[in-house]
Image (cartoon, rainbow, N blue to C red):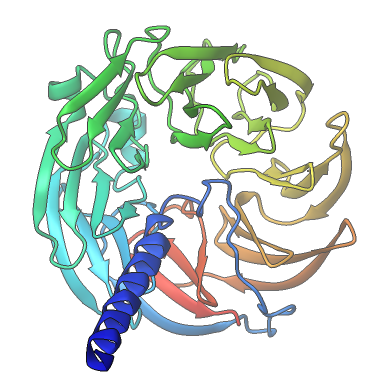
Length: 414
């Protein structure tokens, strides 16, 4: 009897550990656990050395692109490009290649867009599966341990999607049942796929609006689970159970190209968004109703614009970088700029009361944020890699990961 009790205890412990691991891996996705650019780390360096944080390793061979990695406790996954083909790479935490698997053609562009070729989307890890999208719109599901493909579908052929001028950049969203994507076609504007088979669960025509370049956000309200995303001219919410359109907010002034590249942020019933650098609305703060069926504008600041570097909401303040190489903080009540700091314009994340900004010029800035004050705390110049400095930083387990084209770097910041 005693041995039976011990055996049962061991089995239960193993089950608990497995569930804990599953939970950790579920949050390996674009811009952190909630897609809001916030990474929940502690005890990070308050000041970087003059030469920057310690470089742990460099992995080269990713090819063209600026897709950021998704990091788990066992390794990381990142999209790359080789000879025009899309690949998903699995790399261990020491920087060694575990496997790579093909995923159709990668986006190389034509004309002006050919100056921005390569991998775009961050993979999404959910349990023992990893999901990713190529720049040409192929969604695929792989076993995270082996790289074996479970299924793949073409957004264009299967869902009547449209490849935009700069390709598909969407990092698909995943829940217990579905993969959510934005084909951007007239008949299939948004779609949910069975996450185990890739079969269509539902499609939504919405406004028959073409897609933008952001990624969907999952929101669990008290009585409903919804999806939020931007299209060419709208910010919309839909019911995740059936795809029904719930609410829509028009994003004005984008007749030129409609390049909505940033992912909207949801926090405590509020939606924050910063639009790109063509004339438009700039930064906006919106109120989402409790049932997800109404969106109300609270304020806007037309002078604060950011193309694809992201935004952070902390204690009601909105932070982003703008042209002229500035990090700005916006007042929660009216959206006016209440603080700013000279840093290179680029991609922004937040962790442990610190902002990390990967500038488009290759400079990474650490900025402490204490008592609502911005204070510079270190700088690093990225020397490895090639191409544009467009990727977003990722922080996990005290390590900062930076993608620069062909290279992925890991820095110790704890």
